[in-house]
Structures are given as structure tokens and as C-alpha cells.
Length: 334
Image 1: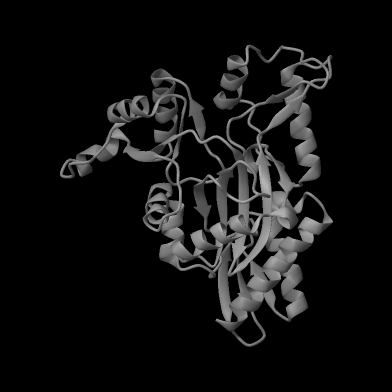
Image 2 (image 1 turned 180 degrees about the vertical axis):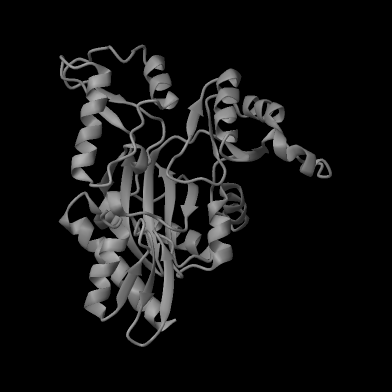
């Protein structure tokens, strides 16, 4: 079995620096970096001894992330966390515990559509835009099968950007576009989706996680008035999901060289507030190449994956390589 993208890249860079990377025998996703000066650091996939453990834990919790960012004046979506029934006995002593019924009341107060997402999962897993209370309950029940806490947020209008920060530098910035298919006048939506999945797997050896059984995909198609057997007109573009995560089939458009200074400063400020040396800051705004007038920070990822970004082209792959080289050089000193 070939080691994952990060592990393979680390082995290549470590060899250049006179270091060794030893990987676990089963999957190659966990390992130890051994430097020539005798220092050693463990890593697990994209998690390194770069960020403080508490900072990573807080960043993993979307609710707490929003609390600290808003505390220091940064704009975040209006939202609130709610809990699975199995947690409620432990929360009875708190006056502000919130169950699914209160979640529905809150969502109605915000006004549909709203976003509902797991509070502590990444890669866009079960992030859904819902349009009524019944749909909210169905999505919440699916999330509660794998997570204890959901986050309900007001929908923010704008384009979706990820900005990768390392120290005081912007390593990469890209717009994230949702999974989209384009009609050819012959193929059904289902056939186009299969073609898109095959294309994604060809461009990226890991393959994007396009799930044919994703209720979010077929629900969005139904709201557009289509079904899986619909044949789209030539050049008709159809967005298949409301979230733009690359891991769910989204597309990245590199804007590193055109990123506006105000976006740069915002991302670095968010990283500093959370005490993160390395992170990916997700921002919704009108245009990241122009001065920020209105924005929302959706979340901050303390262990950003960059394999999909690196697959865009040689320039992007080189940026990722330089990032990991800088990280290894940093770890060798600490």
C-alpha cells in the first residue's frame, strides 16, 4: 500500500534535510520524524507538533472557535450549539442546555434556510443547508448518529475561501466551489456525476469523496426540479451541494497571488487569536481579491489537508512542498 500524500511528501523532504521518517506498517499515516540532531517528533496524517494541543482542541470545536473570534471583534455567522438527547441528563444542571426542539425554535427565529453541521467534524461531513423544520430534524438525527453536538447557523451569502496560514505568512489561498456538473445534452445527472467522480480520482490519486448516496446531493437536485434521470442541456451548470469542501467533490481556484491584504491580515489575526501556528481559515466574503467590507469566518482548521490543493498544478504542489519543508525545519529546532 502506498503511503498517504503527506507521509510520502514528508519522506522526500526529510531525505533532503538529512532526517528520517518512519511510518506505521499498516497504513503509513502515522509516523515519527527523526532529525540528524537527535530530536524526534510524532505526527498523524496532517497533525504535527506545530500547534499547541489546547489550541487545536478549541479550533476543532466550531462553537468555541466562534466564541473566541467574536470576543476579539472578528465577524462570524450567527449561530448556536444544540445537543443529542443522550447528553441531556448530564446537562440538566445547566440552565442553557439546548435540545432538538429548542434547535427548531432557534432556526425559525433565524429564518430558513439555515445551515446545520456537526460541531466538531471536518471535511464538510454532513454540513447541510436546510429549508424547513422537518428537514432540520432529519439532518440533525443523521448527525447525532456520529456526533453529540450540532451547530445551527444563519446562511451567509458570498464566496467561500480557504486561506492557509503558517506563522506570519500566507502559504496558499483558494476559492472553494461546490461539486458541480455541466450538461452535454446526452448524459443524465447520474451519469454526469459518475463522470465527475472519475475525473476527480484521475486528477487526485486519493480521489474526492463524492458520495452517490448523499441525501444532500439528491435533495438539492430535487429543489432544482430535477432527478437523477434528467438530461441537462449543453453547458447547463448544476451545483450539487450547498457546501464547497474539496473533500466532498468541490473545486479549488487558486487566488494566492491576488489575495487582498485585508484578507491576509484577517486570516493571520484569526490564527493568532486561537494560538495556532499552522491553520486553514475559512472565510465567506464577496471577493477575497478586494478590500473586505463584509465577511464571516466559518471555521479555523488546525490541521489543514492540502493534497487536493496540491493536485491543481505544479505551482500549487511547490507551495505545499515549501510549507512542509518549513514545518520540518521548525520542528528540528523545537
